[in-house]
Length: 323
Image 1 (cartoon, rainbow, N blue to C red):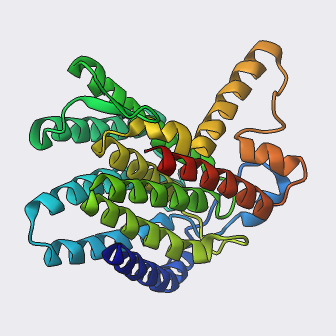
Image 2 (image 1 turned 180 degrees about the vertical axis):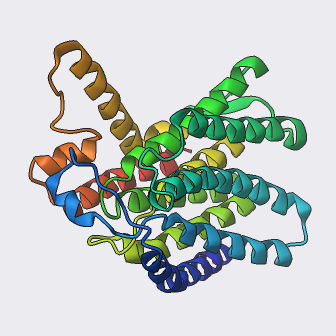
């Protein structure tokens, strides 16, 4: 546990320092956020806030993981960390390309949705095949609460894990709409997953999780209301990838049904809004995703973050207990 805390603190300090360096650079480059005109009016004042802040977390992760790899001689401990890190950062790079097109190249549509999904699909597929062929983790998954190992046919396991990764990245992406929300919720989720990793004996994966949590907390110093920087797709796809990659490696993707309750509700609210509007021409929620509904109901951003984080903490605690 001491090693996890040390790596968390190192990542936190580095991320906090990098924020001081990178945010002014993003300002000079005029890499500013573009707000939806049909979104909450209060968000219009965020126009121009530096985005692509997820690169702060990515750089922090790369450096601290590099230190971990140098200090760790056992290849069996290095392998899962590198596999999860490469997949997660790969998702972050897809998000970076999308952000870059939007804010640097001034292409308001960003990366073509089909190309974006293709990029996420390719990374998910490569990661899944790597785990099966080179790591040999098998095709079984653990059913929480009853702790039963369900062995899936490979033709079912592959699309299932790919679906988990695509769903996780997109769900966190939808959650990122209020200052500090995605970062806070993900920090709690990844902390819970790391604690579960310790319980199950995945020490190296718990260290990886600690590094990500530290980088995320350092970033949150600048991302809490009123945000000095926004993570953008660079950060949200990165964190979604971390959550999916860690749980899949530990055969626990189904635990996300508990831990990831907020991103799941955000996604469901968005889907229901679209379906209901197409059928009736009326909105089911004041605005989707769900956090915007509460904003337009009178909640301040800080309250949304506090309540959603508390729900995540309770759900994560339950998940830790039942594993």
